[in-house]
Image (cartoon, rainbow, N blue to C red):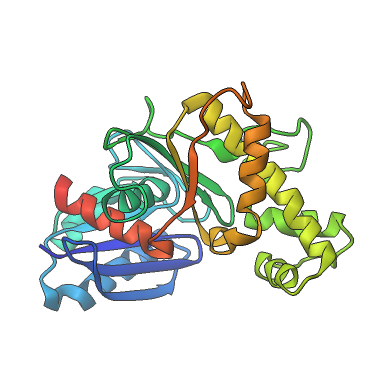
Length: 296
């Protein structure tokens, strides 16, 4: 049975028709609307475009907090839903079974079923993009915590009274080891303000010494974050995904080295394998389409 998987982010709303083997047959991408009604209209319109292929279910990967039953979007910083029973509303409107999951969990499931985490037992998916997202899987099950919001590694405080974060706290890990953090770090190293993460990566590849210093700083913070993950969860595998991971060759070795230095018992214990995602930006759509197939 083919299913439709959505990746609903703050900028783009993406949909794909996915086979049982994780192959994308068709996909669409449109800007994410700013009102709840317009967003649901867009989702319905994209499903209608794919109906000729007779999809059997729809999955929604949402960048926000869901209730434990994954029926309600409690809060999503970059989406218009607030305490909204999204699954029921869309299931009634579409006339198809609908499953809903957090975007990082969806991407993790995609990597577990079809990508770089196949066969892994205890492992962590660590997304580094605009911010930091994460998912924990244990023996083929997604760990969501008691209230459906675990794990929030990106908002661990690594610098007390540090950079202000959009979550309301200061000094969160994602303010030092994410795509948006790169601009602040670049400015601290004397680069022009407002540079994009892509521009900094490009400069580093061209040999710019300041950009290389920025990425060394970034790698250090990321490595400290990974060491916390390893200390708390002791996973066998950490898979790095998200937009920044596309340039992992520029910083991953340094991050793994820092993880090895910062971990408790350094030099006297096994370290997790750290690798990159295979499915790239499509992991969330592929993963949630598979969850829709198996859970509805």
